[in-house]
Image (cartoon, rainbow over all chains, first blue to last red; front, side, top):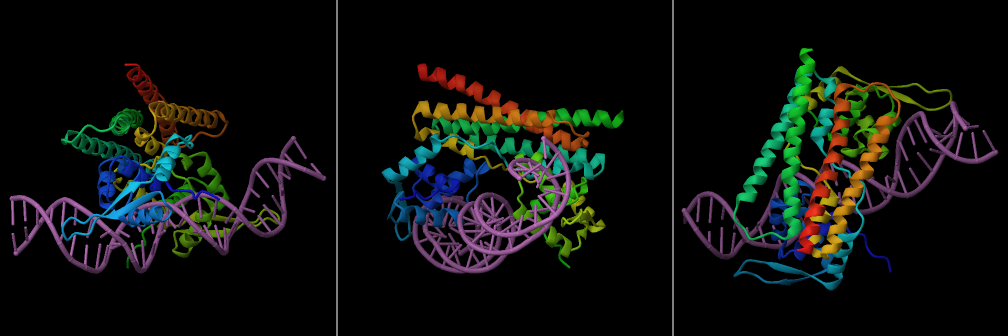
Length: 180
Length: 180
DNA sequence: TAGTGCATGTAATGCGTTACATGATTTC
DNA sequence: GAAATCATGTAACGCATTACATGCACTA
């Protein structure tokens, strides 16, 4: 009996249930405040994924309407819990990110030096906005997050700061070079 | 007349031709030594994309076999050149990376503290290997790269180093916490 | 009563990977 | 003579986004 491979998004669903999410809607809104920056998920994935995971016995759902409003709450089964834990502990793959803005920078030799430098500045501003957004989320009241949840949140903040510094440094360098 | 939207991968193809690549094979091997780390591309995308781009007038290809070996070299048209340049100069989107390993870390509260810490260590090692790979590529002889090509390469190296430091810092912190 | 938030889902389309299939040329 | 590299492509499948469609509950 082969174990079906699960997609990262399937693990997001399982993981969020593990951390206390109850409904599909729940999962989506938690994702939007947390993992979205390094792993997004849409309703178009979440609901069908919940159905598949239920079919395969990784989660169980029961109807729990609030008044006349349809609502289905899910829980991990032991099997589901085992699978997420297995995935979490498994060795990571080679880092491979997907950053369209970096791609633009890579090809910036195809435009004028001034436009290229401007792209670098825009990248910096993008990360400044990103940092602002994270700080706003951090400022919102809310219960204490689990250790690794806040660790990763902290990663986001530091990542943004590091990017801002990196951009500034190279903005200066390339501006000097232009003059020289 | 609406302008067809091009995918980031279409821009990779156009951009690589702009930087001197000639064939589909060429594009793939340059991608594998450069943008792969933040934007990969496979033959299954590159060849059909070249065909579409030719159909739409962004590139022109001509057959240029080497001996009996089939070979088609492509060039940007003015229109193609205009489109890449436009894309390169356009404002970037909100940063959004896709990092499965960060996802694992995010859910690490679902496993034991020891396993979670080990995941953090594995992340560090992953970035150490990544750094090693980049340094090896850097050490290989090869002509001078364009300014922004080497800028982005440098980004990769610094990104790896920053990640290693970040992991080390938090490994120490979480190890202390465990003792306390 | 209008707007926002809670809640569930589907359909169309497009993006991307993997595996497969083929064959010539160069280098060791 | 074998292995690596150059070279082109297709087919199947799965992943992900976007837009659409629906409707209840709460609050200003």
